[in-house]
Amino acid sequence: MNVSAEWKWTDHVGRILCRISGFRMRYSVQPGLYAVGSPGSGSDVFVSANYKLSFDILRAALKGLDAWVLVLDTKGINVWCAAGKGTFGTDELIRRISEAALERVVSHTRVIVPQLGAPGVSASAVQRATGFRVHYGPVEARDIREYLAAGRNATQRMRRVRFGLFDRLVLIPMELFPAIKIYPLYSLLILVVMALGLPLQAASLRGAATEAVPLLVMGIAAIAAGAIAVPLLLPVLPFRSFALKGWLAGIVAAFFTATGMGIGYSNDALLFIMAMLFFPAASSYIALQFTGATTFTGPSGVRKELRYAMPVYAVAGVISLALLVVFKLERLGIL
Amino acid sequence: MKYLSNVASLRFFTDNCTGCGRCVEVCPHAVFEIVAGKARVVDMDGCMECGACAVNCAFGALKVNAGVGCASAIISGAMRGSAPTCGCGNDNKGACC
Image 1 (cartoon, rainbow over the protein chains, first blue to last red):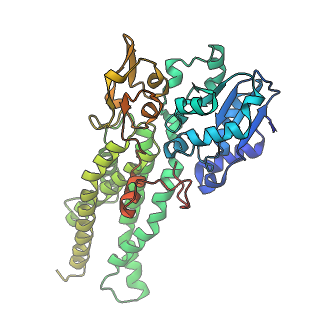
Image 2: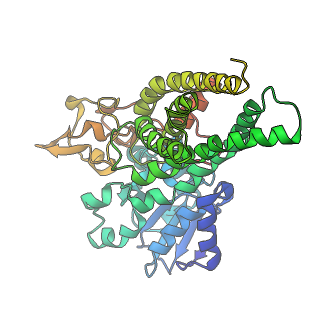
Image 3: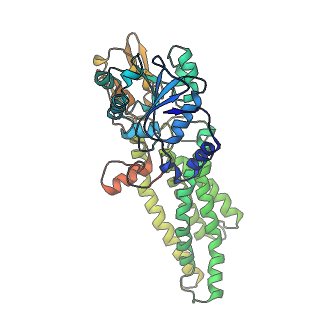
C-alpha cells in the first residue's frame, strides 16, 4: 500500500486532538506493509506502531526517500508505551515480517526498529526466527536521514531521549483534564461543609457559597501548581522526587492565593492551616501523576514515592476535613 | 534530569558480557559504556528500568525489574491487586501514555 510523506490538514488536526483528548485512543492505522516513495528490493524497512501519530511522524520524516514501512498492531498505542507492554514486541514483529513475506519484498536482511521499541523487541530472537537483523534507529524520526547518511549509525545524541520544554508543554492538557474532572466533586464537598447547620434558604446558602469561594479558588491554584507549574518548571524545581516538587509548587501557590484573598494565620488560623495542609498535598499528588508522562522515571522510584506519599496524603486529607468542619462549627457559634 | 537515586533494580553480570554493545545501542539514557571490550554501568541513577537492555542482551548479562514508572498505573494496579496497568490499549478507557 502506497502512502504519502506529506501531511494533510486532517493529519494536523488529528495531532492536536491527540494531545488534548481521548481521541488518541481511537487514532490508528491498519497494520501491514506500506511504501513511501517508490521503494525497491534494496530499500530500507522501517518498523512502526499503528498509532496514527507515530506513523505520521515517521512517514513525514521519510519525505524524499524510498522506503518500506512495516506497521505493527500495537492497538493504536505509540512505540515506546507499546514496547513497555510488549504489544510492540518480538512476536508481533516476527508475525508481521512473515505475513508481509518481507524476504520476498527486499533482498537484504535489515529491519530498522525505532530505538524506543527495544524494551519489547529481542533483536536476537527476531533474527533467529526470521533471518532479519534488527538495527535500532534513532529515538527521533527526524534524525533518520542523518542516521542513514552515517551508514545506519546513530550518534550518542540520537540515542538519548530528551524531555525539553516543548515535550513537556504538549503533555500539560492531559495532566490538567483528569485533575479538572475531580474539581466538581471537590466543589460540592466544600459547599456541603460550608452549608452545614444552615437553614435551607436561598439567603443562607448564598452565604455558604460566598464562604466557599476562597477554597474553590485555592483548588484551582492547586491544580495549576501540580499540572502546569510542575511540568513546565520540572528541571528547575528542587528535589528529584515528584511528590516533593509538587508539594513545593503547591505550598507557594497556596500561600500566595490565601494571602491574596486575605486568609492569614493571624486572622483565620484554622482555615489558613487547613489550606497549607490540604492544597500542597493535592498539588503533590497531581505532580506525582506526571511520572507517567516523563521520559526518565522508573517503577522502583515511583513505588518508593508512593510508599511515603500516600499515607501523608490520606492523613492530610482527613485532618483538613476535620479542621474545615471545626472552622464551620466555630463560625456557627457552636464551638 | 534524573529521578531518585539508588532505586534502580538494574543488575549487571560482568562475566556474561561479551562487549557486543547492544545495551549501549538501546539505552535511552546512556547508562552504559563499553570499556576495554566489556560493558560498564556508568550512570545507575539514569536507569528508568524500561528493560530494553535486558531484553536485548543475548548473553544474560543484564537483569532489571522492568515496568512503567507511572504513579496512576501503579496505584490502579495496587487497587485491583494486579500488576501495574496504565489502561491504554486494554479494555479500559484510560487515556494516558
